Amino acid sequence: MGVEAFEQLEDNLKSRSYEGREYRHVPDYRRGVEKGTVLIAGTVVRGFPKISRTLVLSEGVPRQFEDRVVLEEKLNGYNVRVARIDGDVLAFTRSGIVCPFTTRILERLVDLEPIFEAHPEAMVCGEMIGPENPYTAHDYPEVDSLAFRAFDWRDRESGEPLPVAERRERYDAFDVPQTRLFGTFDVDDASEEARRVVRDLDADDREGVVMKSPDGTTQLKYTTAAANQGDLEFAFSLPFDYGQAFMFRRLIREAFQSVEWNESEDDRRDRAHDLGEAILLSMTDTIETVADDQAVGERHTVRADPATVDALLAHLRDQGLTLEIEDDSREDGDRVVTFLKRVQSTNDKTKSYLDGHIVQE
Ligand code: ATP
Ligand code: MG
Image 1: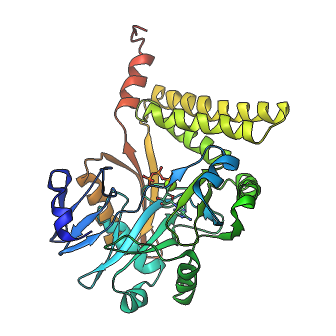
Image 2: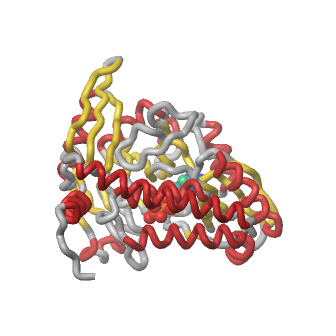
Image 3: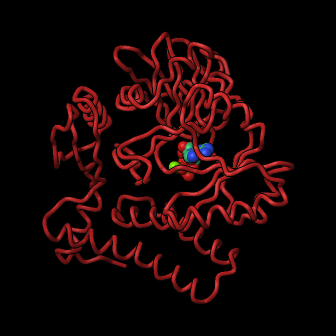
């Protein structure tokens, strides 16, 4: 895609600026262009493509792939694309916003300069993972605070990926950490392998797998019960703010997994029990918190040098979020802040139901 094609999207573009640099991006899904595509300094940075999902491995995998299938771990964090624009290495979020926090903290986590020296047009794609992050926090035993894992390498303007094997070699050569590779399999064996891997990942409370064609162009995802239930637990802790479709989709995934895996009656009852806990206990926690006159919302902790934390808080407030700082301290020169992204509906509705508000239903 060139600058001209991008301009045609005019009506769907949002303008922003980062440190005095104007840019435009595609904030939502649109026909013909990936969400998150950016035009900055006369350059197009393509969005990361949406990855399709199968609910049934044994049927979905052969439908999506022809020959060989590469199996990689799917990490649960937030998507970031990194490109060098006019000499500055910038980190873009899924929807194409330059994230001042990620842009700054990446410098500490991984040295991408040598990649951009050798490949100025590269778009480094990866996941930011770990417990201390402002968007999607999840615990990984190998990550104390926050880490970067590369999972793709694309041309920033065409969006074309490198073949998986080449990408993995290149990142290795540049000492950039990557998502785990479980192997490359014949399509006839891939769903069985994926299922085996997903069982192990599930036991470790990890998210799932992404299967890829060796040329990197076709991708398919599948998630563990731990991930589905973790998402439900989170969504039902803010039941009036999360889209009901988000919850429904995850319930459906659980049912198909239980059937495909031919679960025994005992295992199925265990799953039902876990699912019920994920849904109910998170809601009752929330109701009790509100009954206690405390606010509920998305709680995050970040650790970075003070200027980076300042930039993050300003950025989030700029996006219209209301933040409550719950904890603010210094450790080894870093500022460590725990904050709550306030949500409106769950606080208001829960309070009004607790007060006996009558509903017509
Ligand atoms: P969206 O696709 O819009 O980001 P989503 O939240 O539904 O929405 P996910 O279900 O998390 O997306 O699945 C796709 C995401 O998985 C990718 O965008 C990427 O951030 C992440 N991911 C983690 N590990 C990998 C991997 N090994 N290969 C590709 N993507 C990965
Ligand atoms: Mg994700």
